[in-house]
Length: 393
Image (cartoon, rainbow, N blue to C red; front, side):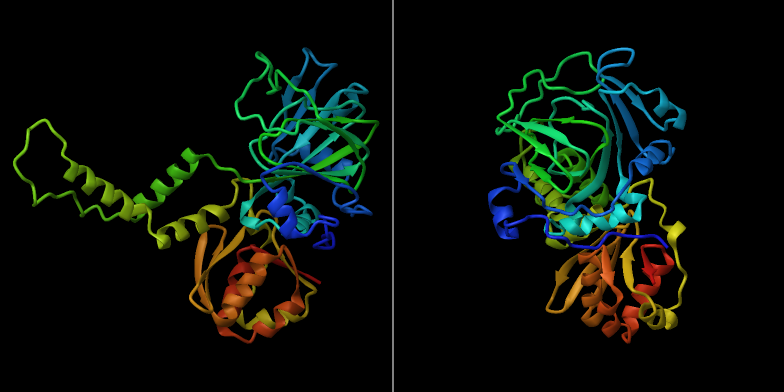
């Protein structure tokens, strides 16, 4: 049976969620010592190496020294024999989207549920031996840097860098100027939170350094606008055209204010309503990545069998790569989004959907009170049969 870590360990230490969000989130870095201690069994170095050899997975090798040139960048998938040829120091292997492939890493997201799941992007894992690093850089997103094994020294600047200024002619984007204001050595269970654009540089101290990076979505304005427009176009009625029955005499080369207002109104009515934005954002935030294959975990079950299946299991688990979210509607309803699809639910079905969206690993006993409802059984049947959720004994 696939093993998952225990959900929802407290990772903020003495900080409350309210204090963290008001003082640190997207404002300034914070070091959380022994936030997850003793550190749970999440992923092994062997698993990181194995994933870097998997053609489905995005992986990289960065050699500060020992390559054909300084800061050599190689992209996977790699061959296992490569690891025997690596130098003793100054190299790092990075694997992206690990939560979409390893159940324990997927469950690890529950520890960070004080940030909405729809804001989360993925988990990257890096492994390095002594002095391995990826240079001084900035990220365009929030990140929790969790020390999983070994030691890493982190150096950071306490002010964000808003403009890119990188060393030219390198395969990796390294900052030209880096003057650290803080230095910390992280050990297993320590967590460093960094808001976007804060310069940082982490160096492995000794062998077996493994860092889990929990990153968050930060789509650009152009990505958002492109997705919104595409969604609006898919809902447009092509039979509706521009018209101006109120046209008055004017200079033939002029575009009048009245025309500007008509076009502005057409655009605003197409994309600015709360119902449209809600539908778009729910689908956008829960779309799965291209490397996700939920059918591989599907457990076909009819609605009639749902109660027995739930009662005989210990956990209902969101499958690796599946994404859920909901928007409240009315007093007892929700628009529930699962992997880009929308479900309008009320009553017990809405409460069930909220539980599923609020947890990666959910004790099955939490759902037992709802399985007598017809809509709940239909919902769970669809999610189980589509591979979006799995049951564990």
